Length: 478
Ligand SMILES: *Cc1c(COP(=O)(O)O)cnc(C)c1O
Image (cartoon, rainbow, N blue to C red):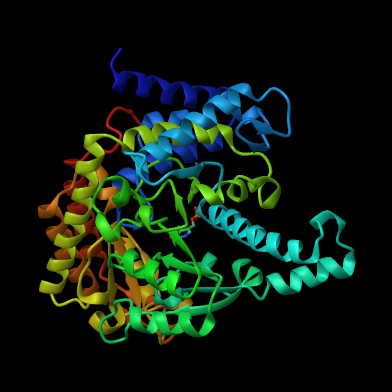
C-alpha cells in the first residue's frame, strides 16, 4: 500500500478509536483543528506542519515505559528496548547536525520541549560549576549540611548569564525575570542597535567584559538576522564564558544547510539547545547538543530537571531527524528563507517598516505602530479576521508594552511546507498591507478595531482560493 493510503488509514483508525471510546468532543476538536489548519494562512513563525508519519509515530506503546536516567544507565529495570529507541534517535540527531562526525558532538533527545531543554542545560552548566565548588570544600552535595547547601545555593545564584533581552528578540528562558532562568542566574542583557536593529557585537562584548559571565547565550525568538557564531565564540573565549546557543527557531535552517560556516553554531558552541517542532518540522519536543566534555552533565536531565523521558515522543523525533536529513528537506529549508525574503521585499515595496529592514532567516517583523498606527494586538486581530494567523511581538523599547506591543512577527516555515513559493508570498504581502491599511483603531485601549465586514468576507474568499491550490494533508479526508 502506498504511503498516502497508509497515513489516511492510520488517521481514520485513530478517529474511530476515539469515537468508540466515547470521546466525541475530542474527535470534534481534532476534526475542527484540521479544518482550521487548512483554511488559515498559518504565518506563526514558530509553527509548522509535520508529516503524518511523524504525527502517528507519537502514539506508540513507549508511553507506558519509565526510563529515568540515560541510555544504558537507567533507574528502572527492563529498559533495553527504550535504550534502543533513544540510542537510534540520539545517533540520528548527531548525524543530522554533524554528518561527518567532525565535532565529536553528543546529543540528548530527552527534553520535553525547548524550555525544558534550556532548564536541563542550565542545570548541567551549574552542576559543572558546582564540581569545583565542592572540590574546594572537599565535600559532596549529599553530605553538605544545611548551612553548606545554603552557601552553595547563594554562590550558584551569583553565576552570571549574558543573554539577549526579551523585547530585543530573546526568549523567556534567557533570563526574563518571571522565568525560572532568572532565579538560576544573575542576568545581564544585550540588545540590538536601535538604529539598525542588528545585534551590536561591540556593545555585547563590552557587557561581557564587565560582567565576566559564566555563560553567554546566543539565540532568539524574534530576530530576523543570522548570528555570527565565530564572533560569539571569540567573545566567550576572551572572557572565559561557556557559549550556549539556543537554536530553537532556526535549527531547521542549520540542518537543511542554509546556515553555513560562521552562521552554523555546531562547531562553535559548547552547548546547543533546540526545539524539534519549529523549522525542524518534527514533533513537539526539545534536544540538546554538546561537546563531549559536557556529556556526563547533560545526561543527568534526571535528576536535574526532568523525570522519565517521553519515549513515545523520542520515537517520533527519530523519524523527524531522518526526514530532515533528506534532500527534500534541504530544498525545503532553502525555500523557507527565499519565501521570507520575497515576503519582506514586497512588504517594504508596499511601504511597511520592517525590523532590521529585511530578513536573512524564516521570519519577518513588521513595526505596525510605525507603518499603520496600529498596536500589535490590533494588527493581529485584523489579520486573523481575514484568515491570516500571526502573533504580535514587542519591538525593542516598545512604547505599547509587552501585551499590546508595536509589532507583528510573520514566518514562512508552515506555508513553505504547504508548497507556497515567492509568487504567493508577494500576493500575501500585498494583502497584509492592504488589510492593515484598511484597519481603523477603535477606542483608546489599543485593543479594538473597525474593519468593514464585506471587505473581510471578500478577503477570506481570496485566501480560501489561494490555499485551495496548496492542499494540506491531502491524504486525509476530513
Ligand atoms: C520556542 C523557543 C523556546 C521554547 O520552546 P517550547 O518548546 O515552547 O518550550 C526556547 N527558546 C527559544 C529561543 C524559542 O524560540
